[in-house]
Length: 277
Image (cartoon, rainbow, N blue to C red; front, side, top):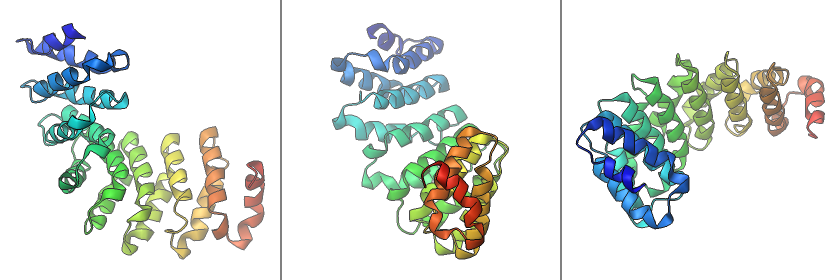
């Protein structure tokens, strides 16, 4: 570890880049008494002239946070430095910023939250799909901290990702859209239901799975005129070719039991019985 930290300050960019990534990869075996030194050294290279070094240091902070290796007294400083790079010229850096700030969620101060939410919204429109996906995922993690007055902007930034060309972005969008249940404006509830219904028919099984899980949590949000079509979509997924999707759909159906139309109770019952519902 000592040698890697020393190499992270090497005069050659390729050496610095080769050093910062292993620091993150080795986070699970690092001595606890090295926390402060590791964090301070990474903070020194987070603004490196080379994008690979910047990207690696930000990613390493995420791995360190996974292992509770960032001291609480400087975690706020780390969050500030990480998110300061969200406008970086390199997509790889912006993507790691979007992902890592989600891991550092609890370190984002109230004074910083407005900027973070605004920045994440901006990143959902990024040209790079490796940025849009993490941005959507992290916005979902911050739903309970969305500033008043920005609910509609946040909702729309996630809803427009329904038609993204990359399945990984659609998967993140489906999960994040499920988190919108607590802030979605009334005028967008129908659009939210339609969005998840579309994602529930996605070609990728993981997108379908995320969508049906999200639908299962929206019982208080789904407009009454959408009840039947939502139940029909969930029932269809109970017979999906993918086992994970089938299981998720059955549990979603159980959560939505109170809105199952009478003329669909019989077909729903066989799936509910299979999970003890």
